[in-house]
Structures are given as structure tokens and as C-alpha cells.
Image 1 (cartoon, rainbow, N blue to C red):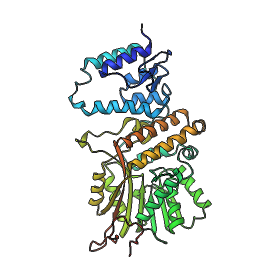
Image 2 (cartoon, rainbow, N blue to C red):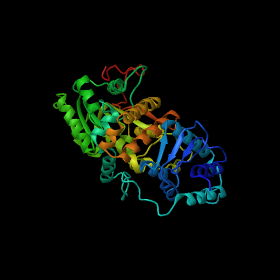
Image 3 (cartoon, rainbow, N blue to C red):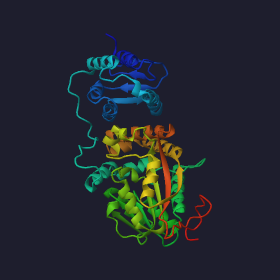
Length: 434
């Protein structure tokens, strides 16, 4: 009987109709596939049982998180090879035979059953989100989702994000460090919002307080930051006290839907709207519009996906939904702009910065790999593996234009329609009141 790696390679190539772009190393020590290619390592045949039980991304993700599936060498090279193959095959999926009836798929499944060993499959790794019940995006369910994502441990995030503790796309220029690029992003947001001394800023989804601190320290703003993460709030308050800014910044553990102390002069929402969900996005836009004074500005910094030909076919990514952002949703940038305008905003600028996020994610992955042993101790081996896979795969998705990120600057118009914006587009240093 052929060794496990050779059998897996033969099964995969028969299914695909072309050579595998990766080399396979199996649990029995065998290897097969092109020499010099990236190496996909199956450490245990339990990985096959997971794939048979949950075909596709979720089964593979469970095997990865459990440590049964790994990569020897460059993780990006393996992900790029596999993802490119899937994207190419997915482009004409409508023309393929139904998987259940496809004899190649059935033969592939039978071969995996022979290799997979005794059933049943093992339970999902502990890092997988618990089964959720009830309607999407209620206050309770959103708080649970945010806790799963952000209450992983501040020490872990510090290793990944670095001293800035900014968990969103940085704004790079040639020669920048991560810290410099994150500082430049925060400053860009402040300038787009035209912040001045004494302005009231609401920072929705304030994270670990970096935007609030920058706005208060550098621009003299009075900032209210809201988050659903108790760990983030505690960390932010400690930083603010150390900066001597407690008289200028308030951090609340509060849902954005419960903020009622407007009007604010400006609102920043950086990497938060992805959690809102399509069923709540108009409510989100309405709430922020109501909280702004006439002439006030909103800066919405949000990841976007490419539009679907049939938008009803959009589904949340299985791996990200189960392990990273439970209930998170991405929308095309055009839909986001339209919803903001339907709520009464005037969209004044959209800046696409997706290449910047790819650079940011690659730096975060490098930070995680540099501090791998400490990161595992701070969380768990599975949790560290979740983040390594998630961030590396996301970097490639940004690079290949599968997803993007945009800063949308919007204004609540004054009576009569005046926006108070400078005549020259992107003259962000000009005063909104000038």
C-alpha cells in the first residue's frame, strides 16, 4: 500500500485535475509532491476526520487550531498557493457539477475515509466559539461576541500590536516603523475630523484607548470612548491615568446604542463597524447622526468586501465566524456610503488604504512569531494558532484585493445644507469652522 502522503497527493490531484501546488508531509513520515514547494504538514490523521465531518474551511480550521495541520516553512507561501487554487476554481464554480453527484468528489471522499482512521471525529478545539442562540446583534449577543474576540488578554495583544496598542490598519510611508505608521493613522483621523482644543469627540469602539489619548494629548479634545470589552476598558483607563489625561478622557463599557449625551463635535469609529452587522447598520448610522452637532464630522474606518453578483449569496466566513469575529459581517464600501447618506450624512471623502492593512498585518504576524512562546503562555497554543492563521490569510486577502479597507469622512450638514468643509479636497489641516 502506498504511503499516506503519496495517497493524499494522488487523491487531491485526481480531484483537481492538475498537480498540487504544495508538498505534503504525512503523519507516517512520508512526503509527496513537487520538490521545493511549500510544505503542508498533516501531523495526525484526525485532521482528515475533521475535514470529512466538516468539509471545507471549518474542518481545515479545526485541524489547524488543534495542531494536527501545520506548515513547514513560509506560511504565506502555503496559504497563497492553496488560496490561489481555490480562488481560480471558485471563479467558475457555477459551471461545475454538483459536488454530491461529482464522481471525482465521491472518489476523493472514499479515499479520505480509508486514510482517516476510526470515527467519530474529535470535538472542536476549545477556542471555537460556543453555540450561539437568539437573533443576531442583540446587545447581549454582541457583548458576548466582543468578549470572545477582545478579552483574550491584554498581554497577548501587546505582543502582537506593539506599544501603540492600535488594532486597526496603520498608515504607512517608506521607512516607517509600525509605531510611526500607527501614530500617523491616528493623526490622519484627527486631521480629517478637524479636531480643535475643547472639541467633544466620541470614539466608538475605543479599543485600548490609543485614539482617545492621541486626540486629547495632541489636539486638546475632550474624549468619550466606548467599548464592550471590560479588559480593553481597564487597560485604557490605566494608560490614560499614566498620561495624566483623566480630566480629558472618559472610557465607558457601553454599547454605542446606549450613548445619549450628545451632541458631539466629532465621532471616530475605527475598525468597529465590522461588528455592527447588516441588520443593524442603518440603526448605527442613525444613532451616530443623532449624536453629532450640525456641521460635525464622522470618520468611519471600516474593512469592506468585494460586491457579490447576488448579494443574497453572501455568507460570513466559517473560520472567522467560529474563531475570530463571531457574527462579524463585511459590506461593500458603496453600501456603507449609501447607508450613511440614507441616515442624513453627506459623504465627503473615501480613501481606500487596503495595501496599508496588508503591511500592518504582516508586521503583526512577525510580532507574534517573534514572541511565540510568550504568546502561547499568555493564551493557549490554539488561540495563538488562530491569530497566526487569521492575520496571515487576511494579509493575502488584502494584497489580492479580495477585501479592502476605507476611511469614509462624512458630515452632518448644517441647516441650509452647509458642510463647513474646506474648498480644497483633502486639505485636512483647515478648520471646519473657517
